[in-house]
Image 1 (tube, rainbow, N blue to C red):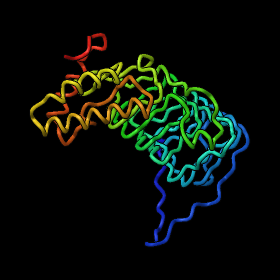
Image 2: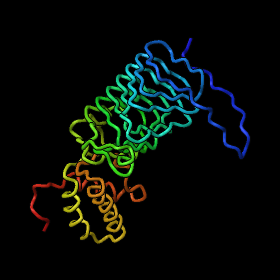
Image 3: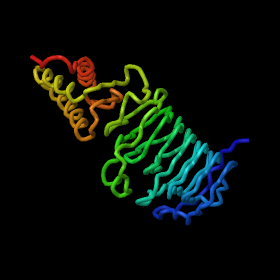
Image 4: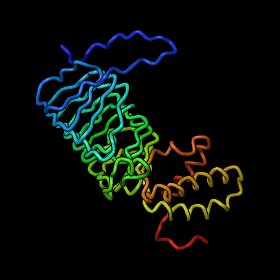
Length: 283
């Protein structure tokens, strides 16, 4: 027996949106067993849910509001077509010791959620912008694509949700088994407090702003005009990231920058890696 639920067959009419059914509101605490999914549209509000399995379930809409706590729950292989945004001024949702392995979370909006000791092995997180979410001691494996993690609440969303804490706690997270593709770690994330994948595909740099300054002084003396142009564009992108994203320490996949001028990009990465902040000014 498997806890994977069969996919529902739903007729579709071309040109008409499929309606989302009214949500079933869950306001009582749940403990143990498998979630009784009487509706494909569910809203949790101010509840504690412990050791409940949602594994393999498909939802039309899944909403979490009002400071819910999920502890030891299994969200493996969960998929939801739509997840609503949190309402302003509500306390954050907490997911503690939960599994999201192989879940399809591309439409999931983490909002002010806090994830503690959760696993995201093989989960699809494409497009996540966790600008007001927190991650502590979480494990990631498989392809993590186009995700931006923020070390501080940022922007209009933080204002709309009433988030006034100075930092998003982000520490102890293990990415060693993940393939990080076009991922960014910004707004003061402490790279030393995480565990990263190793190998030549990735680069880690501290003091990026100063490294960029020193390498630019060398690049402008290049006689290959095309290579010089591409290298300066790459350096400008990196320099802007240190200012706009307030992150002077960098971890990223080398191939994610300079795809159209790979040979030049590799040369720039090598120069940045060997540039010394303590060295004197370039001659």
